[in-house]
Length: 370
Image (tube, rainbow, N blue to C red; front, side, top):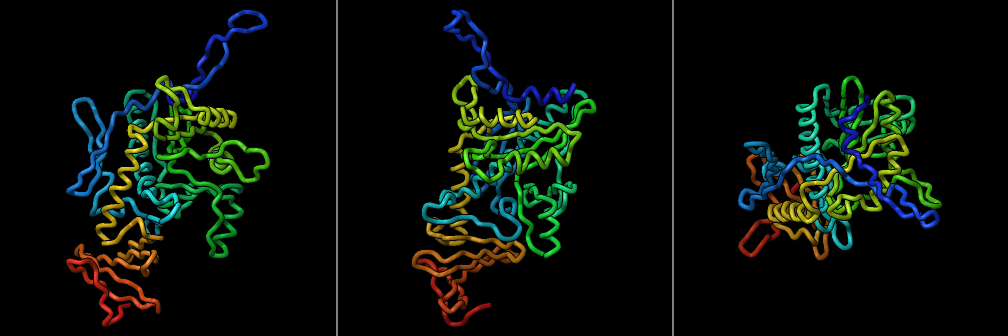
């Protein structure tokens, strides 16, 4: 029987009658692919300017479920545990808070996927699911060819086992083969499957086929093949969540040419594609990303668009801010009581505390700090 429930959510070929000019007869041909079934979840986000929070609200029959996806006090929910790049200047792709936008997209994707799979389990006897979770740095699965490792924030990394073992033996970071945003085990009446999840709030840039002269590996070789090799008795699904405009071209839910190509490539690799649209538009994620970035700028008392790079070390309660035009590197140190201090580094590498005044921050050069 197979995993027939999830198969229903794959893009389906749309057949249309086309006139054969030679015979003068109408012939049925595959014209395009279309999303005929979606997750069916109605949800929205709410920004609270006063509390500086974002809640995700899922509609149920007779009630709603509210899930906080960003809170000012819980910045760790969106940041990596140690060092994370947040913003860059100039023509960088990070100029418009893309880091926060991408993290929010991953969080929302997991909320929708869990809700979607839970509803399938509640309405279809014999169907069950379980997220694949490990602590960051723990091996999820491994054989002589591939290794899958858990990363931070739910991300999952693939490696060639030879590269992975060589890197760990030499205390070096092993060369990553591929990366994706989540993995779920599903089962329907004994038939098992693995659902690879990917979240894209902007351009869907995954490469599924080689172009002329291309030597780099495709997404199928970097992500799909390792999962298939490590779970040979499971059927593999590739669930991509993106904004509707990136997936379909019109109100009939026909796939764009770009997504049609990816669907065909995945099917040719023996994988079932599932393309699901966010409830949000691309502009919604951009506005949420800027909302969080502006709050971060307010906390640090700096002008985010002028920053070159920010790194966060939550284990030490410290934020290091790279030098920017007309200034020197800054550091924000947070304390257990919620207070924080701002420091600036001089040309000799010494750090001095900056005091907040009505006119802004004033550097106290009387005594350097550690």
